Amino acid sequence: MELYTVDHEPLMSVKTLKQEGNNLLIEGKIMGAMPVRAVLTPDQARAALGLLGFKTFFFLLTLLFRPGSKH
Image 1 (cartoon, rainbow, N blue to C red):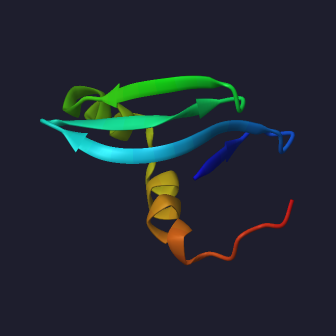
Image 2: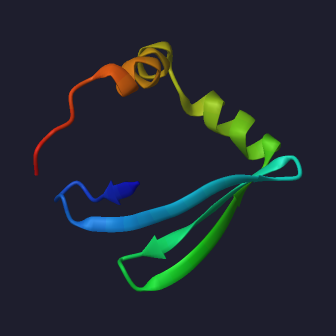
């Protein structure tokens, strides 16, 4: 999975998402060079849900079924 900046430049390449105990471990590279391992805890996942409004939450539910954009 690739994450891009608003200028369509590669920001992060996610290699794996896996469970580690009660957390989600995210491994990848930032800007194609710097390896990174990030941990999403249950508390932080709940905090992220608090940032979403109804419209954004609905958009995330339908995101998988939308056509991709061409860069």
